[in-house]
Amino acid sequence: MDTAWRYGFWAAALTAMLLSWCCVPELISPPFEPGDLRPPAVVDWRSSAARELRIAFDEAVRAELADFACAEDVGIAAVQAGTDGRELVILLERDQEPGKAFSLSGLAFDLHGNATSFILPFWGHNPRPAGIAINELGSVASASHPDALEFYVKSAGNLAGLAFYVGLRGDYDHRYIFPPCEVAAGDFVVLHLRPQGIESERDELSDKGSSGGLDATPDAWDFWYRAGGGGLPDKNGALSLYDTPGGSIMDALLYSDRGADSTANYGGFGTASFQARATAIVEAGAWLKAADRVSPGDCASSLGITSTRTLNRGSDSKDSDHKDDWHIVPTSGISLGRVNSDAVYNP
Ligand SMILES: [Ca+2]
Ligand SMILES: [Ca+2]
Ligand SMILES: [Ca+2]
Image (tube, protein in one colour):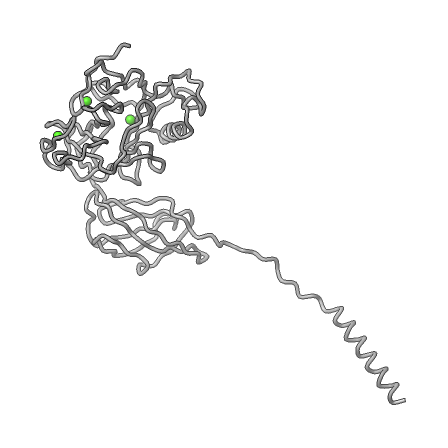
């Protein structure tokens, strides 16, 4: 009797337990929601004043002064939030030296705590950038006329940090950043892209007459690209000039010998790279196109260009961002460092 009762009791208890387990709602984890795990990304940066740097991100960020360091002796005084919270403003203790390269390292967090660290190159803020434009193209070299480019000074100022690209900012074969040099309106500046490496080739920081070398002249400012391999594309190229390496486009030159009827691939440009650069320069507002899509016919014509028949603006250096500003001068019409010839080469 007792045994039977005990079995009955435990059987009932077990059944009740099983029933109650079955009725307990199962504990289900909520679906995994990753939230924001992506760190903020730097989208732009620049020296914005003598004692100020700005770094823009793709989302709101915060940062601590202690996480920042600067290689140059400018001293970091504060790190503040800028526009929309998407920008950091780095305040410096001392003025930057115009055009001088330095780097800044730092750490920024988005509002979910994702961190990104960065080391960014800066060029000392130039408070008075000279207004210059590409004026004469010597892209087809000979032994006595290596690749060179002339700029015309439209408005006085300092060249420090102005950046010339074979290509454009973010997509280039060569880049040259000008050193500090005071220039006057009407001056000419010549960048020699394939120096011989001889001692007399000097960057003229204060004396227009101090450099020797091929195609250097006593009355123009001569500079020498020393990074090596700095040729200009002979007949089909996209060149650009920016107010700082991370800054705004000041001028550009698109040149081609293909013409509007070109049936080459990539919209007539022949290469994806040339088409992409031409399109980007037009979209940046530095060159005009005739139709919806930029074509080689929108480029200044380089047909007939040689080492002494250079591609030139007119003698007035007029700049309307249009191919018609440009012409090929007759044989021996090259005028690097001097006013351009208005004579036109007739094939
Ligand atoms: Ca000179
Ligand atoms: Ca222009
Ligand atoms: Ca000239």
